Length: 100
Image (tube, rainbow, N blue to C red; front, side, top):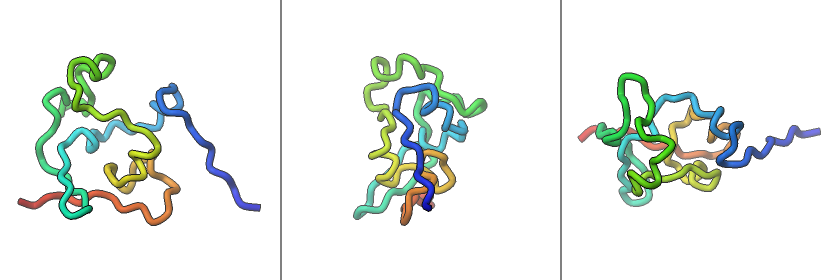
């Protein structure tokens, strides 16, 4: 019998608890020909010492560019391969670092 992965609903405490606070998702990314690359430019609201958002609860209002993570976005290749949000997604293509 195969084990089914439990679906965790976005916006719940359980969903939020998956985050390991690495903050790599808070760095700008570039899409070049369908491949995602991380840049070394963090969001202006990221506390790089604590790896946390300074405005997390108000991020939608204060920083509309902030994307709220959903399972569909997680699967799209914006998160690092070791992120718990993408664990169990077969053939997941994680972003690469932009070396330029």
